Amino acid sequence: LDVFTYDPGFSSTCSTKSAITYIDGDKGVLLYRGYPVAQLAEHCSFIEVAYLILNGELPNKDQLAAFDMNIRKHTMINENLKGFFGGFNYDAHPMAMLTGIVGSLSAFYHDTTNNKDARHREIFAHRMIAKIPTIAAAAYKKYYGQPFVYPQNHLDYCSNLLHMMFAVPAEPYHVDPIAAKALDVLFILHADHEQNASTSTVRMAGSTGTNPYAAIASGIAALWGPAHGGANEAVLKMLEEIGDVKNVPAFMAKVKDKTSGVRLMGFGHRVYKNFDPRATIIREQCHKVLKHLGKDSDPQLELAMKLEEIALSDDYFKARSLYPNVDFYSGIIYKALGIPVNMFTPMFAIARTVGWVAHWIEMVADPTMRIARPRQVYTGAGDRNVTPIAQR
Ligand code: CMC
Image (cartoon, rainbow, N blue to C red):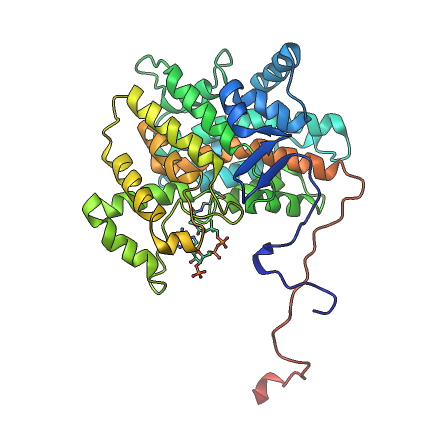
């Protein structure tokens, strides 16, 4: 300890230098490559933001068209991957399928996984960002027992995803442009968040020089947990459990009772101690989408707003600087769009793939990269001798 710093949960350890995303948690600031996320959400598409995050600058028209085309041309997945989906049980969680299938991509696309080759890294980025919606939509179809729907490359990124999820052979499906736009905004807000648990996991796995698809699969696994990307699913389950505004006080009492183990999901953040700028945008988006869909008197939205109001004026939450985070309202939007609860975290994974890929590239392209290898404070037994089994 005189040489090393004990920092459980890495609250004050900078594991890397990065030029991708800037957060000021006290002021509620989030910048991608210097641009405020609110401006990006207002003026850009998700694919434009993906280009920015990967390349450091916003694209001009030609650069955007070329990047968009590269993503569109990689949307198909190898037909043999269907066999992998077939191997899962009917009730497998889509995140379980996503973790496994993305890991298996390393067995299909190993022709371009030389981490030191910039062209290989670029093709990997295009493939990963293009294929993750196809894989997530296939996981959805598997779960619901419907036939897989192939990508339609004339559709933009989010319209294509909605089409792959909701189209069925029996009848035509038309993507609602407002739904696609809402998804696009949500994806921009989720695209990167510097050294969060899943991105740090991708970096840690990637620091060993492992196959990049395997590194992304490890990030998906880390995202799944309810303290991270799984929170959007947990928020909806919590709202269902509370059921009615009249039950909020009893639920709040449980949250404040430390022995209950119950937390107000979608609240609190390791870095934001003032407010989460993404939550403000998502809240607005939530009202807009629900109004468009004629669901503005949604009882779960009313319940969420009541919970937020009570929590924000409660001393427990004030004293701990706990505010709604990005996941508090995102689930309500997803639900309004017809996306089932177990697909909420895969939605997050699709968007965050951009950040994971950008961080992986930033790391492996850096000649000073070292394997991530934290130290520990040992608390076990001292040096002792083995007693042969007959004498134990
Ligand atoms: N409800 C009730 N109490 C809470 C909550 C909450 N949601 N979050 C933190 N606290 C309390 C916690 O009990 C502790 O109290 P005390 O000081 O009395 O022991 C204090 O606030 C500090 O909490 P912490 O667990 O030390 O904070 P952390 O920085 O380690 O955890 C967090 C951050 C996001 C995991 C946590 O706030 C949490 O569990 N929130 C609910 C899950 C959630 O919404 N996660 C999504 C995060 S944003 C999207 C993403 O990153 O994927």
